[in-house]
Image (tube, rainbow, N blue to C red; front, side):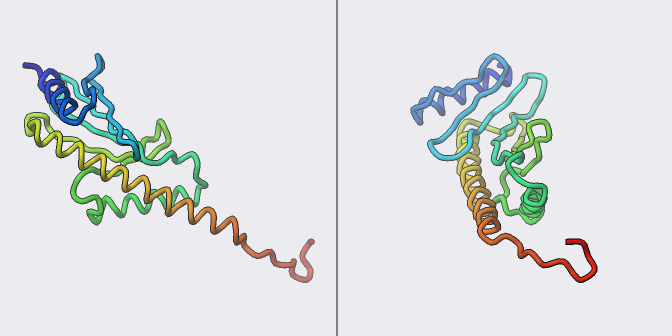
Length: 160
C-alpha cells in the first residue's frame, strides 16, 4: 500500500469518528478546520517519506515594519525556548507573507491514533497561537493609535 493510500485510509477513519469528510485530494492535500482557529493543511506525497502539516497563523502584510519585526522576534524566541509544547515550529512563508505553524514527521513513524492525536494538538495550538498574536498585536496597535508620540516644538534656530 502506498504511503498516501495508508494516510488517506487513516484520514477517512478519523473523519468518520469526528463527523467530518476527511480525505486527501488528487494533489495529496487535506485541510481541516475547527469552528474557531486557522485551518490545518496536511500534505503527503508518495515520493517524500514525510507527512507535513501547516497552519497559517498571521497575515504579516497587515503589520508595520516595526510590528512585523517584533512579531517575528517573538516567534523565533518561542521556537528557541520550546514555547510550542514540543510540537511544531513557527516559520515564515515569504511567498504568501504569512507566519505558519509547521510540523513534519516520517509517515512510517505514525499510526492512526498518533495521527489523530497530532492533528488535534496542532489544531489546538494553532488556535491558541493565532488568538495570542491577534490579541497581543491588536492591543499594541490600538494603544499606540490612542496615544500617539508627543510632538515637540522646533528648537531655536531650526526650521519650523
